[in-house]
Amino acid sequence: MKTVISHYLNFHSSGAEKANKWLHNAAAAWLIGAVLGQLIFAYYIASFYGTHALNNDFEKWNEILPHGYQKGKIFDNTIMLLHLLFAAIIMISAPFQFSPFIRSRFRTFHRWNGRLYVFAAFLLSIGGVVIVLRKGTVTGLVGDIGISINALLIMIFAFFAVMRARQKQFKEHSRWALRLYLAVCGVWFFRILLMLWLMAFGPLGIDLEYFRGPLISILGFAQYLLPLSILEFYFSSRQSERSGPKLIMIAALLFCTLVTLGGIFAASTGMWIPRLASLSY
Image (cartoon, rainbow, N blue to C red; front, side):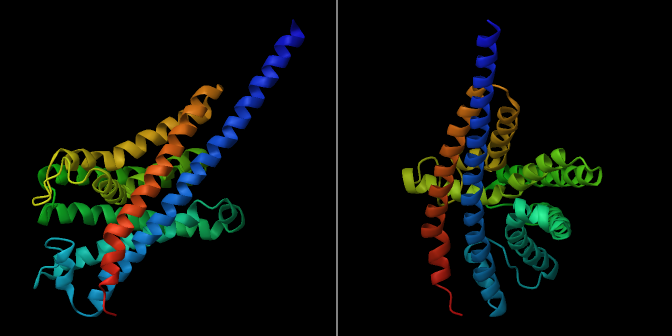
């Protein structure tokens, strides 16, 4: 009997270890796809808005961002410019923070790049709230509330990520850093999910003329609440001693990877690449 129990426990442990390995690989696959998509988005931001800024053609911003540029309003225009700049910075710096090679071999760079990321994310969220208060969002009151909550979460996650690092609680630091990363990506998630929906279902649930509708309202909150919820399930399944929750999470992550890649393709071909192609350098 003791031999049978020992054999079962060894088999169970081996299954859980294999599931953990596949869980890690599934999470890494999603992250790689997401990072590539965000680098495309960062290049789009820098190229589109940067080119028009260098050409002193700021009015072109308003083709994408209603009231993004307002002639004579130096404060509002400066906030918008810094908001776009910090958005590009955090998407470029984020991949370095997730590299185990950099974390182990270049710890000083990891710390300073992390400080840059947190600083940029914090200012990005403050700038977002200022823009909401002064201009509002294109999606109306629901969008204003959704963006404001997102900004608040970014600031909270940034605070705890820094505090846990200072306390040398690196496991908890890593968790808060991941929460921060997903919250910062909220605006990016909104774009890729919206474009994937339009590619698959057309304007169902959306009033394109006024940019309102049930789907817009749902995405206004789902853009950060959904990824953050999935992340918490990931943490829970990783800690579980059973293989079942891990396998469910693996399937969920693979599905999320397909959705993310589909959204990146839809946003790139339907929005970012055509706008870049229209630039005159």
